[in-house]
Image (cartoon, rainbow, N blue to C red; front, side, top):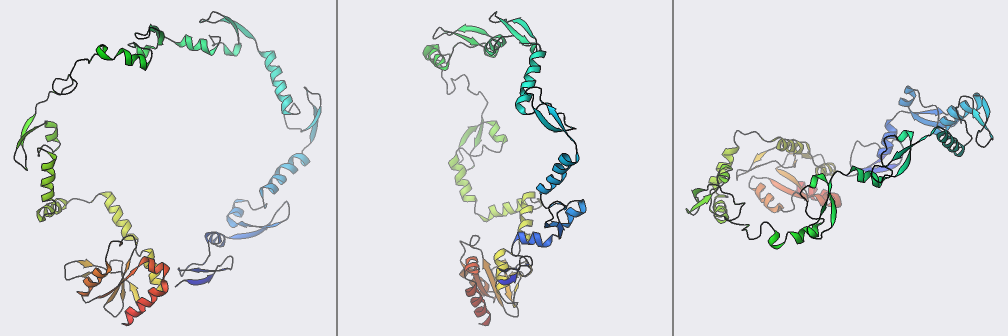
Length: 391
């Protein structure tokens, strides 16, 4: 049953399934749990709220950033400090500046003009000759290391390869040092030049024993475990645990017959005895054990009376006549009646009647309730449980 409550912060009514909930939203919870104190702004005089933690650090004096800036910068700089008039050296205009500032010009445009003038006076150019095109060019003193007159000449000067003639189209092309064995200028020329008799593998068998890449390894004779025929295999396959069957069909046939036998299950269970479980399996088991009760079980516990108690925390195990152990979700106190809550995803392929018949063999009456019924039809769920307890 949902509970109707009033929010402790905004005083508005809201409904919830949790008994201990006090606030309607996270925003109200954050504001309600924080210690808010009323203060007066030192600049504009407005009243505002601030956390006690800000006051302990030394804050909480101004209502906004604007009031803080006006108090700290505007009043301090333009009222308490002296203002001086200066003349711009570029446009010869007067402008007001604080006495401590090092500003010399009135605007950014004048600043750019003054910097360009100073650079022109202090710059001196040097004559140089380009080693590629043999042209005369001028360079600033700051760029003493520049050797070429342009980026194109610098690219050609960095080249340390050689020029070769293409074997197909007879054109000249540049080849870097990393491609010393290049013979063609493009992929088209290489395709034409290496086709037919010009190809080194022309007339050579590429597959089978006559191929130059044929692996000449000694094969070992084995006997197939399924059909008993002799076959040959490589020693590398035997080292990895293979080489037992002559073909895939024999391997599948043996596995198909051996997979679901009792002997196979006994061998698998014996192989796991004494071995520790992997870390990821232990983490999953611990996580699953903590997630109890589930969300549908919590809602069902709130809807039902106190007579129906939760026992799904693995504390009420019962052995059934077929040798299977079961621990139901809920039990009616004083009666041999239990209730199981089925999740829509986890139990989508399960038949609830089979579970009811299984519990009947142990003299236990069972009621199965689905997850969608709890959320969409809570009234019918309550009627079902009351009828089940009464009858």
